[in-house]
Image (cartoon, rainbow, N blue to C red; front, side, top):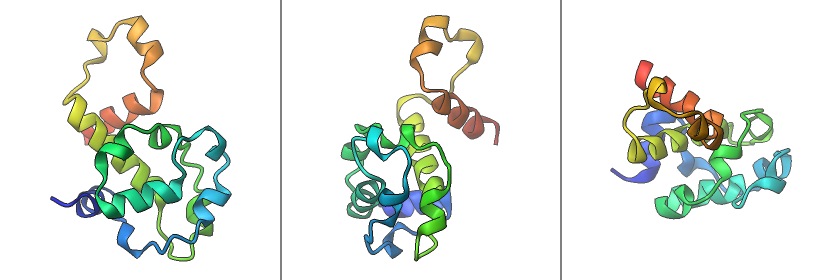
Length: 124
């Protein structure tokens, strides 16, 4: 399945409708901490370059503040796309996380949003 289609199936958002205006990146309060801008993540998703996206930290850093969505002229909910990318990453690396089996050291290393995403995936 093509990446843009996979993201749409998970998030309900059509990344192909983005015309790269850059307002999402310009409104993101955490852009300074991301190695790829939200605009770049969308473009890489459009191009199907999953490895480049999944090796970045951007979708983990996204705080889902909805600033990008509020300013998007195409009304693309980028926070849903970031969540979809988290799910794709988690599904690829780990099918199921049993919190009882995760050590305290591992819990300190795992981004909290990764645990939340996994629990949403496995309990939905």
